[in-house]
Every structure is written in C-alpha cells, then in structure tokens.
Length: 460
Image (cartoon, rainbow, N blue to C red; front, side):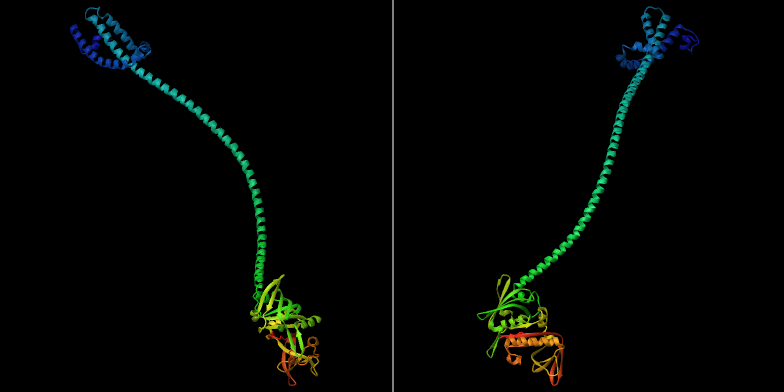
C-alpha cells in the first residue's frame, strides 16, 4: 500500500523533509484553492438549505448516502483536528491536521453538495409525490365525478327510455286517434260534398226560381204598362185578344169585363157605345146582343185591338187587381167584336195569321146540286163548298145566330145590310164552277161572326 508521500509526490524519488513540506504546502495550497471554490459553491448551495434544515442536518447527514456520511465524518474530523491543532509540535504534528482538514473540507464540501443533491432529489421526490398525490386525488375526484356523470347519464338514458316508451305508447294512441279523426273527417267531407252537391242543386233551383220570379217581376212591371197588359211581354203579335166574360151598357159606355189572352190580366174595358154597336133601317145591334146570342149556343165572344191603336187607349186605375182601360172617343181605331166556337189559342193564332187563310162572307142560300155548299160573297157571289157535313152545319149555325142578332131570317145578302158579317176562315183551293168562283174548304175551318163598329173600322 502506497504511503502519503507516494500519493503526494509520486514523481519524487528522494525523501527530503524540507522538500516534502514545501511540496506538501504547494499541493495543499493548490488543493485548498481548488477546494475553496468547491467549498464556496457548496456553502452557497448549502446556505439556502441550512436555514430551513439547520435543525435536521445532522440527522440528514447521518442518514444520507456515502457522500453525506463522508461530509459528516469530515466535519467531525475537521473539528477534532482544529481543536487539537494548536497543541502538537513540529511538522509531523501538522500533517494529520492538514490532511484531516483537507479531507474534512473535501468531505464537507462533497457532503454538502451531496446534501444539496439529496435535498433537490428529495424536494423533487416530494414535489413529484405531491403531484402524484394531487394527480391521484384529482384522478379520484375526476373518476368520482365521471362516475357521477355516468350515473346521471345512465339515469337520464333510463328516464329518456321511459319517456320514449311513454311517448311511443302515446304516439300509438295519438296515431290511432288521428286515424279515427281522419276517418271522421273523410266521412264529414264526403257528407259535406254530398251536402254541397245537394246545396248546389238547391241553389240552382233557387236561382232558377229567382230568375223566374225576376222574369215575372219584369213581366208584371211590363203588365203595369198598357202595352204589357194588352200584349204581354215582348209579344211580336199586332193584335190583342180579350175574351169577354160579361157586358153592361150604361150612359153611352159599354163596360166589358174580360181576360187578356197574352198576359192573363183581368181588365175592364170602358168603350164608347159607338165602337160596339151598329144601326141600319131602325135596326140596332150592340156588343151585348152579340155576346148574349153567342152564349146561348156556347160560343165564345172576344174583343180584338190593333197594336197601332195603343195611343188611343189609356190605363186609368186598378180595381182589386183588375186593370181599367179606356178608349178615347172619336178616334179612327181598329176594333173587332166577334164570336166563334174556337178556343182562344186557335182564334188568336188565326187572327194573327189571317194572310195564311181564305176568307169569304156568306149567307144560308144553298147551291143547287151541291149538298155541302152555300152561297157566299167576296167581290161578288161565290160558292163555298165544305168538305163535310160537320163544317156545313157549323156554317148554318153561324148564320142562324146572326139571324137572331139582326132579326133577319136567312140573313139575305149581308154585305148590303152592313150590320154583322159571317166569315168562314179556312185553308182550301179556288176553282171555277159553272161560271162561279168556288172555294173548296180544307181541314181548318173557323166560323166567325163580326159586329161592324159604328165608329172606326173592323179589325177584319
């Protein structure tokens, strides 16, 4: 084992105490300077920890690692050496002190630095342990929180599932109710459509009725005028046919109660007597005579007005729904007072279309050799040959009624008398028979007795 001198002076061969002291001093100084740097660094580092660890350094140094224990023992040796350094004598007595001091200082520096490392390591361990503890605590807290959140989520999911089940049940119930309501709505809609169609039909019916009523209103409004009463609404005919119901004559005026064919209006005609009577050779025939004679044979009597004579007529008043029409006197109006077995419709159509028929004035003289023929007059003597006995008998009956009216049996030559005329209106053919004009009566035959007016002209 090498000695101290070999360690300190490995390059020296000879042993010289003076030289050894010198070399040792240099080495120690160099070591001290070097150690001083480490020591100051260790002291500065240790100072920061000694303030807080001054009560625990011995125990820490004792319980520390090898470098710590070296620092502890070095410090103890340093203290012991210093305490004994002033009592020895000679160089050799200083060597242990120097060596001890050097070793102690080195050990102390190393120990202090080791202490710093241990303290730093222990501090970081404690920090790490604290962080681990905090992390573990946070982990536990977070885990607990997450568990709570998971539990709440599970509870929410369970609640949502329950709610969903309820909603599903409610949904199914609602769907069923909606389907039932839809069925009811469809049934109601079908019923409404049916009611709508029925209502449309009713509306159309009502509209038709309203239109008819409006037309009737227009007609009634037209009837309130003289033309509307006598000729109806938009009637193109130029004649007005009034069927006579009764006649009275008072103070030169004939009051004729009748019904207008075109409009159905009930009227009272106030006619000056001159228009409805004819006098000749002390013989006078009035409208009342014609009407009374016609009623005995169940013929109808009529008054006929020409449309062109409306300015000579006036509407005076209304008595219980009956219109009163007056004829102004001394006016050249065309009027017809006649009797015929034909109904009002046939008579109206015949009189409205006289140009389509043949007309002859006749008497009751028979024609020799022709059983169904009578003499007639139309611009001279003519023969009227009826197609059958029924028509012939009608003509004779017409002449008989005329004889009763004018008290002239046989009614000779009515054209010369000018009181009443008997007309045969028919469709037929015209031919020459033994130098006489012959009218052969066809299917239509209407006998008409006409009273000639004293004033004005006959409608025929």
